[in-house]
Length: 96
Image 1 (cartoon, rainbow, N blue to C red):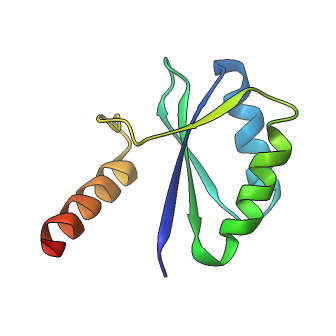
Image 2: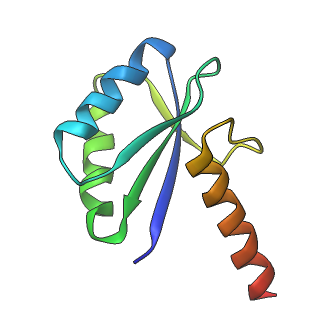
């Protein structure tokens, strides 16, 4: 099962709210903070819940300012994000 990373730029004051919303939909996705100063977060979602997660994001856009973005070059100090980045790098090299 593939894990999708959806990187989002939000206002710093909205990080906790977005995280709370996704936590209230148990099992849909996991929010990790990539850069708290720049207010970049990542939503980690498995295939089965990708459509639900996208629907939640669409709904949230009516409440808070959020913008989907490409994966930042630096994933901060979060060990999980570093492992995901390393895994993605490995997959890209193996695909060549």
